[in-house]
Image (tube, rainbow, N blue to C red; front, side, top):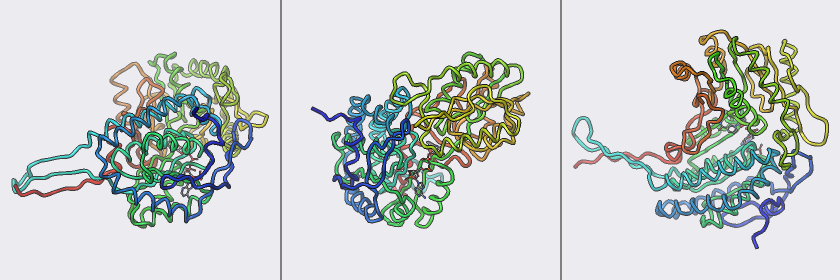
Length: 482
Ligand code: NAP
């Protein structure tokens, strides 16, 4: 009989290096819904990081030479195993991250889909063949696996942020070292077990946890065999890592922070805009890089939108992620709650009104009440910083030009949402928005088949879609005399 995958103890047995589980402890993993310690995972020193590079480098030639069809079939089996174990994985994610089970189930399906999508892409790696404009020779472009890749992921999507990197890396023929966030490592180890079962050869995927990410990551990046850093996390850490990677000129893909505007024009379908607002704001209790951070609502629809949003937010059931009735789980840490409290206090001090919520909830877990603020001013700190919690901040605007100016008034440029029934306006505004992704009359944009990523200080490169695999490949040009 298969062990129960939702059991945290099963996934705290060791680092996964070169196909072996190296035991250890030192990093407690807690349940944000209760504060209870779920398990302890190993704390890698620099030497374990270097052992992971050895293992990934030793496996590189074999994996690169593995036919694309075979790589594809392994990824496909990994997708099937994740799908078979979906409920257990969802419970595990909900335990260590706190997100509501419905969100966790959605994440597992989304995460597994990266393996199925890249199983398909593995067999369709593109190349090019052209005649040089001068006619002197032919231009042939091949794509080769870039090499050993370091993957660093955040805690808010413990499964999906890992598969969004592992899928294209393995499809491209690269071997990887995954360093998951310290708050949510259990899901990463659980997926490594499924990878073993799917037939991923030893050393192709290595997973380690550490309490000194700076030192371990610097040592890994300094090894000349490591040719790729794919990072998802905050913009400040992304900046640090870009500087670190520059020392050995390592190729970087960066999926960083967001500050998504959500524009509602007078001509929007109000119930649809409210449905979309709830998804864009409350998926993962607001702990998403694509979360709507700033609601800009036009004068004519403003009051009805605020009333509708307040009613929906106030009706949400807050509770432990694993309680099936929960619609809004806890924040990841007490520190995250304190940050939200500070942002709300600052906005209120500048004249914002609390329509519902507005405070942390008593009790053992890290809970914050679903909150709606209106009359928020552009000077509020939350207009510039990620709230990363269940707080909807509503600002007012009068015309299209003002909406675009306010939406773009940020260093971030990941996602934006636009609600209007005027098709011309939708694309006119979409083109003017400085963001990598725009959802038109939709509250959800993430799709493994689409290029996900940001402009400005939200990142570099794209994950997913047909281009995601090229982030793990190097173009090689042959000048051919034929
Ligand atoms: P974070 O603090 O930047 O951490 C992300 C990862 O980086 C974790 O694994 C962390 O390890 C590691 N890390 C931290 N400091 C490091 C250092 N000095 N050197 C090397 N690695 C280091 O971000 P987070 O709080 O986990 O995640 C939330 C952020 O991620 C938000 O800003 C969100 O917008 C962003 N995000 C972006 C996307 C996207 O696709 N654009 C998707 C999801 C989340 P430890 O856990 O051990 O500290």
